[in-house]
Image (cartoon, rainbow, N blue to C red; front, side, top):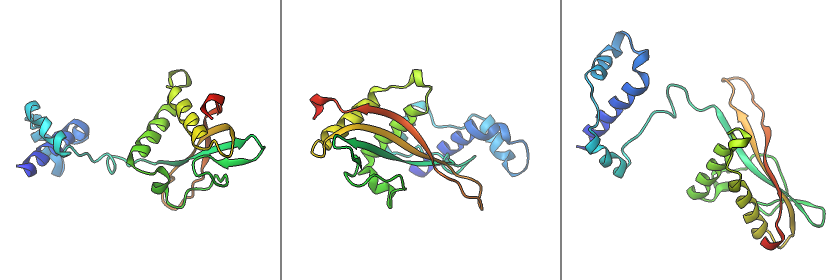
Length: 183
């Protein structure tokens, strides 16, 4: 039963995303299936959502994501020094050795993905409290060294075609002083 659901869902997904590009050849049969209205009935869609069966091929096709990057939480101290507020250590703009470990779990990863999603919007449409709350959270977490100012930076890289090297671009997302009541 599950296998049939996955097969039908994949056909439905393919029909909604790729059918305009199918005209002839081996995919012509799929185009016929799409025209016949093959798909998961609305009343059964909850089943796939519940079990996580609704998958997609967006990671691989029609074109994989070519954007990459990582966050740096640059902070200045009241004493005049600089630290990485995320790690509490020396400030470095180099990529983390293990990027997945930097986030500390899937919930934090989702939060930082949301931050990056907001940062890509036009400035007047950004939900800036998401940045401010994150920076003030860092101010509270690193109250001992005495943070004065925190800057959230995304090191962005567009992945070039094979054989070419890309470089990281520093994208300043938000800068803010630590609120004295948060310390």
